Image: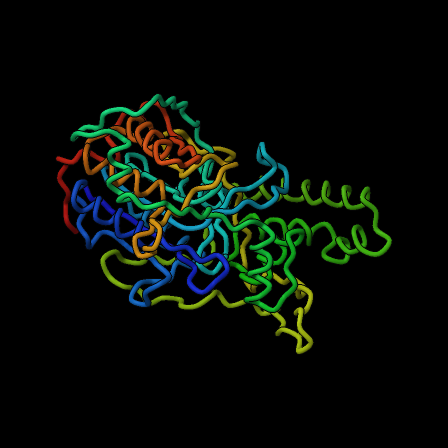
Length: 427
């Protein structure tokens, strides 16, 4: 049995979306895994955006590393993926829309978003007999794997194993100081604005999928690439302009979007027979420091330089990279036994980046801090008990977010990640 983990923290330094606590979260989870769960540090991969000694957590790098983590698993292995950073939502398109009409996504440091469909496509590869725990400390994180959400009811303040109650724990963490909070969310309009600033292209909420595909090429989210494939099949950008531009009508737009949806459904059924081989996500070893892509992902070959007059050019005509193969859409839902998800909040909620007043160096994610605090007092707590206690902990501290546990009932009763006494083979 081998225990491996991928820990990702994005503070987005120097941007309008800067956070304070995400790197601290990564280090807290690292300490929890090595101290209480028997993980060897050489089997824990860290990706952060504030230290060049670590691989940069871009969309491409995260997807590659997560794919390697999951596909390398052998029966009996225990895997953990923890993401701390911003979340977002984009309008759902195509033949299988979400119930709320939105796709949830995590935001890597280069803003090459990883949509819930992307995560499910990777987690689908989890070998039988391998345990995977996913922790998403970001906004809109509910439903990322589309597992069943277990109902969790919380009461008043309760005693915690190890002594004390929830209020005592929260008071000891804050040290009597006022707690400042910032939502870990990049709204769609801010996402478009930041992409415009970085690329010089005009990115708007209404063309976010087209812009993502154009900027990041084959490394973009598969939902963006599938949309562009369907748009191309439906007549390309000229058809879109004719439907919604000069002289276009809302009925024409609706008709075109229906046609795009049909094209996406056809490509989806054809793509299910293919092996998913997107973007050359080569394996990278754990414990070492693979070469980082560095900086923000470079735009594709059709990218245009910003105009000298400001405002940037319109998005360049989209062209798929040479040899590109459209990835298949994942199954509508994962088997319940594939992965256990703990979320920072429900899909419609925000998660907090919390900072004791006057000391940004001690900032933390509300979810991550609650998990590590509770596990330190009860290392063998079950998933269900943990999320129940986390909800009490956050409610006591004045946080409105409601973390969720999404998995099978059988998995919910297992010890969180593993029992503290389980042994590890070091490789």
